[in-house]
Figure (tube, helix red, strand yellow):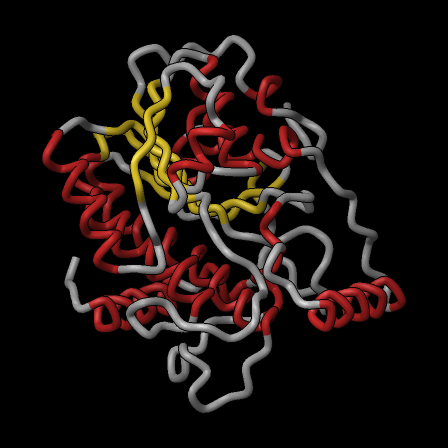
Length: 310
């Protein structure tokens, strides 16, 4: 029914979200703003999170039915404070869309000493989502915004912080995006008996602020990788507008059948097939990203790293 060109407004046509409460992380720019706008325009009450509240107030100023809370995913103290504030209000959610993230910056660490991309994209969301999981209503959804970039690398359970291996920006990004998918797989397994389902999605190639931390050297390395993929027979990247890129998130959260997307990886407003093609571009999901045993192992490691059991 929908495809790579579908927009948020097309996906939500005729959908009434009055009475629904949906949390979206990362609403200060790009797709987060569009996801919030689209859901709110159909009647949902949206709680948007942002590290920079001043910036978020500016970018979301015209959106009704939206409230903002501060959340710094690179700080476990910040994660816990935001989750505690939501619990204090005890207002349930129908869906959580974990959209915030960073991509391919130089090596750095979060406030808690985790490698920046794994710490922000995975561990920050892991701790935050698990802490607010009791607020998800029966029949609720969790949507983890992953990426086709998961094809750069599987998670490294033995060296998540690049202490034993040489840091490469897109390898780190790939690990964190694979972790997003594996988290959705295990979260779905743990919560589906109470009617809560989880899925991961790839928004597609979209020009946003996500790549703002990339150095010229990183951009050049990515360009060379994509050119090599094309020579090997990979399909060219077809870039999307922001409304097209945000469409799969809202489709997976409020439109798609729960049993169709639960524990799966979605792209272009549909469920993706497993692909073992040797290039980064193109559709499909790597089998390692959906491996249930790998998902359990990552969950255990993540609990150890954040110092909490869920």
